[in-house]
Length: 201
Image 1 (cartoon, rainbow, N blue to C red):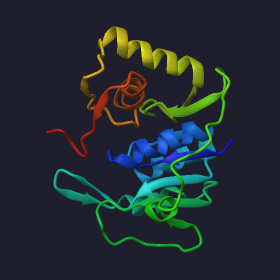
Image 2 (tube, helix red, strand yellow; image 1 turned 135 degrees about the vertical axis):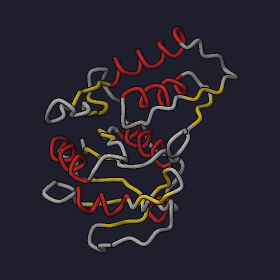
Image 3 (cartoon, rainbow, N blue to C red; image 1 turned 180 degrees about the vertical axis):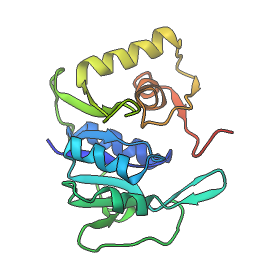
């Protein structure tokens, strides 16, 4: 199974990328977009990802952050073969025609129908690194069945999700809280999830 690094801000493409990986059985590993290129590099080396999905840039506190520049530095000395870039800020970026692809270009002619890969409950679903604040980050393995069950039921029982709810979890998907309560738990429970790009303050 391919491993895909995802280095995106809180824009729709982060959800699309994660769910697309889940649908085809590719293992995703999200790296918080505010992390440095070195932090990205370490995580890509540890996951051995071959594909990185990122963006040209994003907005944080009114400023454009050149995420592609960080990604270009971060992929050095890794196994990354292709970099898929979402257009977000429209900022000027470097481009390597040998491995860079526009997200919109490769998805525009794709069919909305995609066969779902049937996974075993113990199959690897995603890898998510610890913060690395006490040393080199460690990749935590999350499996399909166990993770999906806990994500569904904690939303239903602890947050008391109901079908007409709109839920806002301020955590970025670069953290397990954001994975679970910004994306998977609300969607598994069939409710609307709200995302906010940048810093909430």
